[in-house]
Amino acid sequence: MTTIRKSVLISGASIAGLTMAYWMNHYGYDVTVVEIGREPRRGGSPIDVRGESLYCAKRMGILDAIRQAKLPTKGLKFMNSRNEVQGIMLVEEIGALSPDDTEIRRDDLVNILYAKVKHLVSYKFGNRITQLDQNEANVKVTFKDGTTGIYDFVIGADGIHSGVRKLAFGPEEQFTHFLNFYFSVFTVDGSLGEQNYAHMYNTPDTMATIYFYNIDSADALLAFRASHKVIFDRYNVQEQKQIVIDAFAGIGWKVPRLLDALQQADNFYLDQGCQIKMPAWTRGRVALIGDAGYAPAFPTGMGSTLAMHGATILADAIAENENYETAFKVYEESFRPVVDQLQATVYDGMSFVLPDTAEKIAARNSLGK
Image (cartoon, rainbow, N blue to C red; front, side, top):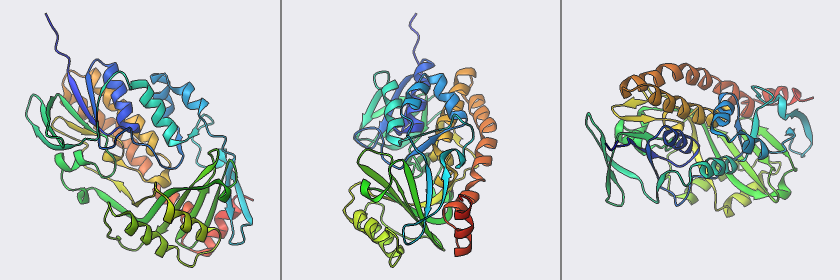
């Protein structure tokens, strides 16, 4: 007698999606990952693997690889406009949950996860889901290239602007909680930074940070507060660059040089600071994980942790409960308190990275003295 293996389609080949792909393959599912890019989703500033995600990594057998890729980060220096150090916080003082917390390049974590599942699951790169049709037994999926597939479950791990969430739950605007700031990231020449340190410069409501953790290039992060949403075309990079240039006009330190680098950057990214808040992360046979369901925003430092932890919780629940509705309920009820608690820390994080007065900047900088 032939046993038909259940199947799952995961949208998004980044941290949440690749973690989910590993676990669903581990639990005996036929796994397909669809990704709009031509390869797994890389890029972005360094990230932290901390808390429960370390335990997830240990279970997956990748903890040693993560530790080997640990960045030699020494700390964060607060700078003034004359490029003088106003204070220093060592890496173990910056939001650490435990001594085992590991800072790693985002690309390195994606590569470690991808290497773990590359030959175990199927991929549809350069593609995306355009239609979902559910019934009691399965989900029929239509892809951008016109092909279709039938799956037992569809998991949306496709980020803040999730297409799966839009198709299964409704427009993004229903679930986006704007935090009144914008941020951009891009690569700059290493000469702008200091090896193994982050340099941060603030004026009220703006922040410029240079992370120099690579061999010859550094990462720049520019963020600014905004009283209202700025409307822009997500596909018009020049328009987005101009928004950042305008927001940082007249600001000193190394900002003019950063803006020059920004204009030449081919990996520039701009987005609003926001959290995704939803009354439910599951609907029928569709579930959301990671930023698609509960983006915490970068000032929490917990996006990667929630991505890996949430994917693991959901996969375990599916494996342990024959009825998927029960599994989805376990996922919702067990993980929501974790998400709520971590999302609530965003305002403390914003006060740290984006103080809104000169007095608050001085007080923050003095913490490192």
